[in-house]
Length: 342
Image (cartoon, rainbow, N blue to C red; front, side, top):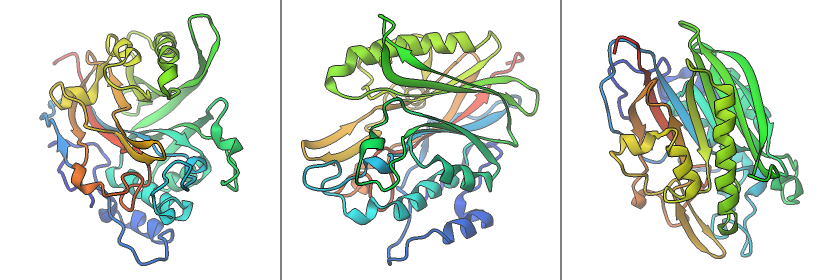
């Protein structure tokens, strides 16, 4: 079900839900799958609400690993082995993914595992967004025979043109301490607020998962923080959206929070979401917190964050399902700029 929580008293410019947006209704109606199912989103509420100050722009950020279509193979030996196949088909998933984004109308959208960038680029332009994409090095989607298109997945960032102007697009392949590639991409958009040209650096990364790659992820996080430092000046506001494939207790995460703040940890008063990904694999159930929004608390304050849905609403097949098109939930935070007068 669509979250009906009210945003702060001075909400972002795009506060309206999809069901109150006539153009969105028409656009989604043409995509809706034909079989007779109800299409609603997971029930979620905003938490950690802080009243905004009178001065300082408020803006909304979404961070989401949207699950590459090339990685949705489902049988007894592959990922999502118990998920009904209809919930993995692109004709179904594209509707759910787009509906979730438009329901929250973020000003900045940070996506991982995006292997259908052209689709989202076309659809989101109808609502005032522009975006950039960079493919993941050695994307596993290219070699998946179940996917007819075989497109590489990667990272994408969209921004709403009523709020931001694009200045520059920068990226690099992260390296370890021996300067060898970690097969991980860091990519960023340098934006400016339309109101006053204040610079905003939006960074996106997706680290390599697996129990044997923790040291690699840690070293990638060191290079990631170097990449951010190289591209952010003293006046720059920094937002980092990431699927770290790391729990909050691991070294890569610890390195990043020594330099930035975790928006969800702040909104939840020091706690972390109970999960950001929950799926059934042939090897068993996986329920982890891997996804984060980091920020600079000298220049930004967190107003609220979209909470994890209750476990009871997720269902027996976990994620993806009829309410969520990905095996990850989206993270959504409202921020306000801290002004010199504060």
